[in-house]
Length: 480
Ligand SMILES: Cc1ncc(COP(=O)(O)O)c(C=O)c1O
Image (cartoon, rainbow, N blue to C red):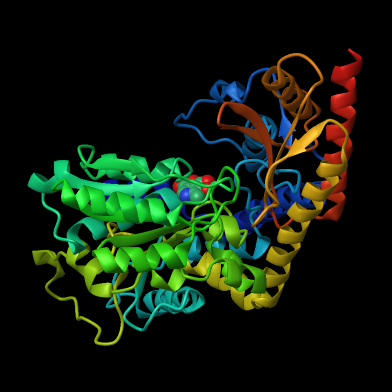
């Protein structure tokens, strides 16, 4: 048996490369990523390729290894090249972010040291770092000391965690689901609807409260509906306000919603996945006033703090609600010593084994300080405004409301013919060019183009390029 074990150790030794082998891997990976960053401005934001990455299948997972050079070539050809480059400043669609370099260093160290970040007892430092970041964000939204929160993979999972916490906090049981009411608007992110379904609450009533011309919830309509619902024997349970909608960047009247929710005993959740971190700026702070009245809020560092994908945050004003829904133990945890002053993430979130997500956020915040984040967010607000103003001057274009945050909408209105078809074609042409990547949405039947500025790599020159491309592609269609 000993011989067999020793032989297996030898066979498995590739799993622990020695220092020279590590150096080769590291040099190649660093050379690759340096080239990626150094050429990012010359490269397209969006690339149509023939096979859309299917060439990856030509190298199936097998018993035998390939070299680091071959692995990087496969990655470059079939993953980096086709489709969207979300790291590009030209990514101006959906909700960009970018992926700041410092976060990659945090991920690198987190992966190598593999610190467990779920429970204080085995990993006090990692848990303290997590809690310290949660506290920093809780301060940003003026939550009291009783607040707690969770670092998760993104806004959708953060919203889901909020929904189940809100359900339990308000004592909603299965037998009540068909009577309870959720108030959102037509602009609320679909991850909320998805979360309701995943939580098993698809029978609940969903009321899309009226919005005004800026796509913001009309608070008087909310209050009226709550009163009517109560009279009809329903249970008004949850109101979701948006701190920046995805479509147009609208901000619901958070203060008024907060007051209505309090008066009527509703849970007030805010989806600030896109807009929450604008609280770092003076303008954002003013616009998001009322955020502190919420019971829970979601903010995505992989959007508003420009982190690489994989970090969303849920904050809950009263930690006891998170604990009530998520705290469980097991016999094999009998040795765990509870910390008196620190919450363990596993007690307030669905995960047990957890990626050490804090490090990818702590590293950039410590290495840069918060100042450049604030400046970058302010720059984005101004860039959206600049784009909006320039588009408003461009002949034939209709623009949406002045951007509250960093999303601007616009569409070409041809003198004759189908405006929706024209704008669809315009978007297609912009994507074929590929230097910038835009997306569209449907606003009351109008095919509308949107430009969302949130990549830390989008600057004045990017927006000027976008304006130039939009003008040139419009002219091409008109002249064809
Ligand atoms: C307002 C809003 N909420 C929630 C989400 C979902 O976040 P994620 O994609 O991180 O799951 C998004 C994504 O764009 C969003 O814009």
